[in-house]
Image 1 (cartoon, rainbow, N blue to C red):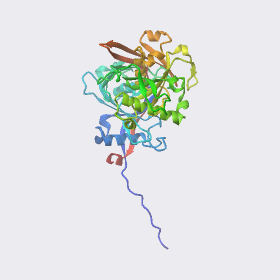
Image 2 (image 1 turned 120 degrees about the vertical axis):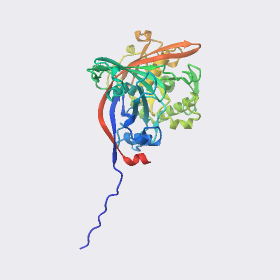
Image 3 (image 1 turned 90 degrees about the vertical axis):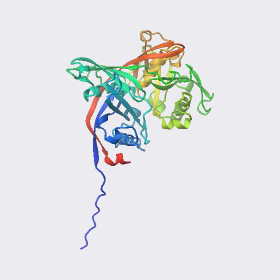
Image 4 (image 1 turned 30 degrees about the vertical axis):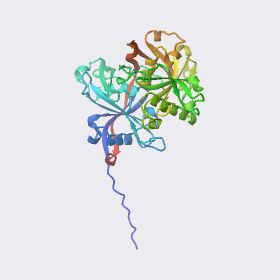
Length: 412
């Protein structure tokens, strides 16, 4: 009798455990880390950190599903956050956001996530990163956040009950199924501090494009850097009503290619990149949004939205797809542009007078419903400035413990 040869499995390094919290913030969710909990090589910017976060989320995934990671296969759910005690004066924590590409080995650090900003204060308090003297037994904790990606201050007003973060409540946010506690978020001086809020110097520009994208070869655009660099165009100029839902655009490959071309040319015009070919390496910014006067429509949840309840309609793309609701940073751009007469956003809202606009707030329709955002803008020495933008979101811990990744990820 001959013995069968036994093939032993090849030895690989085991998985490592990294403390993490899976959180929803606004209409996004992501994996949150305390900086000091990361492996030492990932505590600083570089390839090791990017490799770790890509593996945590499950990217790159040619199937586009992120099945082998924590990502949800959408731009809203392929996100990571790193929080640390702040070295900045008068700030409690530093917040760093990484937008993880789904099908590419790429983490974009070029901008902020406004939605997840609403969860940073809660995470910081629960993880002992905010001095106890700043946390009331009952009431509102004011968490001063330094947003490291864009070097800006964010103030989160976090509800506290019996010394702990209160997550449950009756605040409803369109795009989120269940109610939760309201978290007011202030974005202080959200415009780019290194340049003009309007990089071209104009409230409306003629954006020159290939004629196979726009037949006329030119498109009216408002390009603003507030909250996040954003290119606004009129929906009707592209054949849209502004009331479209996701499937109307995301199921149209030609439309997606058109929007990506607009984004690339807009990025060059705004001075974010030097050539359109560089846009692929800067997927998170700028955003592209279409604006239109208010029209009645039915949201993705079946909710009837009346044109009398909103000031305008806005649809925005994130990471190459139409967003299911609205990115928080893009909402800041919308609120800011709406407060400045002469932009495409303010013109779209100019045919309706509502109390919200009179008080510095604008309410706009998006695919999941509506959102109200306020901004304080002023003209100083011929330049528009915005002191702050304000909106209400909610946040909740979904799971906490550890994420596991193969140890060899850090050796690549």
